[in-house]
Length: 447
Image (tube, rainbow, N blue to C red; front, side, top):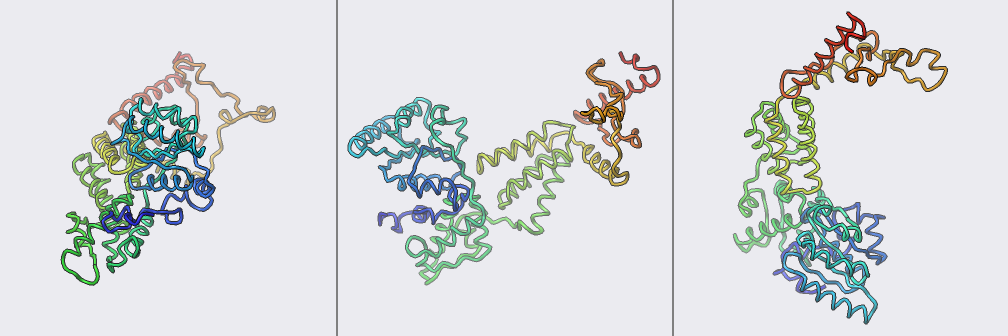
């Protein structure tokens, strides 16, 4: 490894970049013991891949480790600064190398989604022929950003944001490593300062290490002390960001999510987005917020707006697939939608009423006419006898009982007059009137 890479002039994040699988932190599903990518790297069997994951999750690091494991020429360029001319040069050099050694060239293309269709097409014949082993990296969904022929020739590997423990491990390693990190500076970090660095990083290793380096540099400017002590106030000054008081397991956590939920329920979009970003900026788990919104969509909006639940599920999926900071706006979109949607807790009350009825009345028998009757014996016992198939009747509806006999008149779901539930209420009332007519005048009353 070049000494220049270990120079203090090299950014800390680059100096601390893992140089072997043993140094990798996170992505255990790929490089943990027995994981498929770990086995491939150790065996040297390299294949074309597209690494898809958020910034700072290890895409470039894994690409370099794959290049080293392949024991082949390794070339890297960015789709932001390189074009077809650069690719043609790589191809010429790869052809010369194969003529000499029969080895392919490993080509790492960072931000491959930045290449247009014509540029991506240029890879195809060389990947297909084996001249080039392509390793692409992207923060965008490859299904939309990479052409299908190229996707079919490369395996898509998904990386996840680093969790709090992973980031803590990286930061502690950087603080103690004397060869490549800050070990010679005797850096001491207060626990609350370490937590803040982890929260600010939002799963991005590069951001975590860059912020640590900035905070240490800022502290060293204060004087030539033998050691560097970082507390929360010092990091706030160094990064020019005020740490929001927040305890992910304590009072602030519960108070703030409560304020968020009640603002949504109160149909106040302004307060709702405020509390949303208070949580995000303080380091709350975004998927925890999404899960609360999913519950809210069913509990407090329900069928007053049937689009509320798909909207929140889309926000959840957006965070999983895109991550910060881009997906924060998806959470904001779902928040404003939920806050402005018509409200109904009818489903929540239904759930409570049904559960209470089951607790009180126990296991009531299924009416004979709606039981399954797959055998002759069951049919002889009366299973399914008298069942009327709704599709054989006008409007695909016929008046018959579906609840147990002892509960035939129970009503659990009572739709409101708000939003789409008004339409559901109209439909239910129409069916009730039809049922009443049939009881009075016979089945032909609704024909």
